[in-house]
Image 1 (cartoon, each protein chain N blue to C red):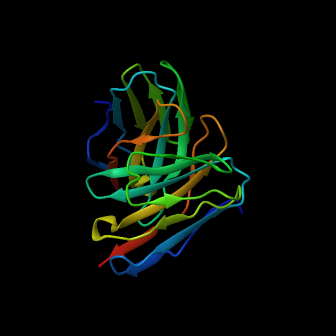
Image 2 (cartoon, chains in turn brown, green):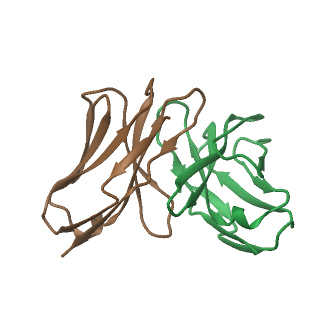
Length: 110
Length: 112
């Protein structure tokens, strides 16, 4: 069964403590992998698109990488304002369908 | 400001009473989509549209209808809502290709 799995479900970090979030997928014919940030009560906010294994994208303290089976979202020296739920999604079917993972809830304490 | 606007933000209704959630985008995007978000189930795609008059089912289309008569609008219609459609709904739009979706602020629907 095609799946997108994110781990961990929740992650508590101290301010400045770097870590990584994982998104693994078991789909064939990946057409794109997306990372989003979602704050409570709001819609997801687009962060990155990755297309092929080996690709990397960066934005401020965030860096996304992609392999053939998974993607990592690395957070370097996080700040409390980085606290949010991070979602990954994959596009692998014709049309414009996205399949989302369950998300990782990140909490960064000062 | 570039945005996706959903209305209403909150809605409480009774079983069987037809309702429409509106969605409008001002970015001239071809792609639009509806999602529902439920605890433990994440975001699931209901319907999507790749252009005017072109719509297709997502993963959970049962009980929902959509139409795309204008490029900017993509309403979600619940002909006979049931309690299992209680959820947080998001509309989203994007350009064609692997561009990220812009999401609306969400509509929290409760069906009693």
